Amino acid sequence: FSAQMAEMRTPKLLVDKLQGKLKDRVLVHRGFYNYIFNNKKADGDQRFDMILDDIKPFVEDGYKIYVTGHSLGAALSSLL
Image 1 (cartoon, helix red, strand yellow):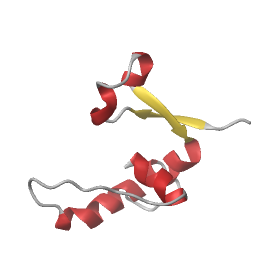
Image 2: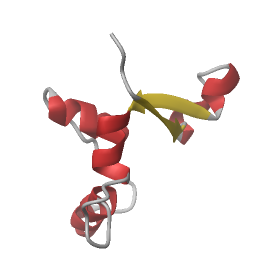
Image 3: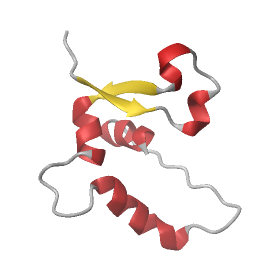
């Protein structure tokens, strides 16, 4: 088994819970990472930017947004 991995900056919410190199970066599957953050086929904004633009009108001060999914959607939502 050989997975292609990409480095991703560790999310701020996790930094204090991790040790060593994981405080700076975590490894994620390259396919998931590229789909959200580094899609060379996208014109202009990446999917991450598009998702943020879509949800910004619904975000109110003092509230949190939880993103969930099933299967592939769960893998992608965990990167947001």
